[in-house]
Image (tube, rainbow, N blue to C red; front, top):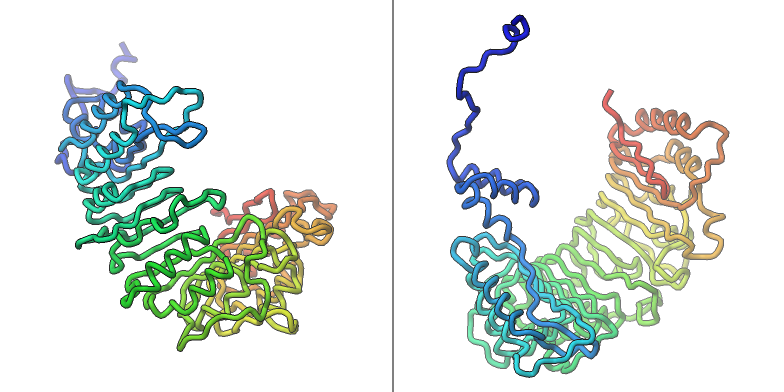
Length: 480
């Protein structure tokens, strides 16, 4: 009886209930992970009605299959019927408004007999006809799908997209396209170097895109980049007035074609030259390679990622905040710089290395370097050339150059250097990777880290994160 008397009193039928407007519940549901959101749809009819469309925010469709010879086909008729039912459901008024992302990926099937009675593009045409019903669609990705002129025109019916990704696609050039054109803000085109274009005149459909709305372009294939520069941009009188971010392959011919077109991009703020997986002969290695001149060719970029050889040819002082450098010299196969090359690029003293303008480096707040190894000379140069540095990331490629492991610092040497070198007081994030994690100190590792951690806390009060060596030791300050 005493145990019953000590229990907290609860009135009969007392159940905690929260009454919110449907709009508020919907706002809450949008933050839930997919499994939890699925559970919500099973609780009651009201929640199912609100939450079910959110399960379809991202869709993936397979328009057809490919065999080993890349022939397109649809094997079975029931595949078409099931796909039609799914497309009809997703394009309904209840679901279609929630779709934000859509992907078209064909699948490879081996050992299947082709069915000539089924047109391979019947589902692709249906999907393209359905896209305008996804009224809030923001991102569209198309991989290994070739679009003819009529299908390109169907794609233009979307009117606008935030992101369009074309991977290994051939998009036919539309000879006559009446306005309005497709308004794409972020355009990415990927094409494998070993994939041959069936018709280079077809290109990638640049003629259907509105120049006035493109804000970001990423192209890493030299052939496609040349089509973009020479055809789409080179023949345009108005250029790309809204373009802010551009990624191009680091190919010598592409670089030479791009330089005189800079004035067509008045708002360009971020420039990236994609680093190839292996340094090749088509890269601008010679320090004296020629580039065509143009009045005021430099840009006040806020972000530059590319070889240090091209930095003086494109970046104007006063605005650069994020800098990522690598090299095209054949010291390594992956673009890593040794300490002497980096010293020559930042300070001078090497007639074979172009010196970067100190005024360009002065405003950098985030620095990323690809190097062969870390040593005192390298860190000292960084300390003297970047006075307001907030984030420093130094990456060492494993076994990029013979003998690097013997030159690289271990963890203890790097921590000692941090205490002795004059890093900027503004430094907040620091990451050094040397791939040599064997301690040379007799002190236990944990004790050494704790001692250095306290010393770093005193010297660099703004430093909030330190990651050293491949073990990714986290020295983030603990709350005390």
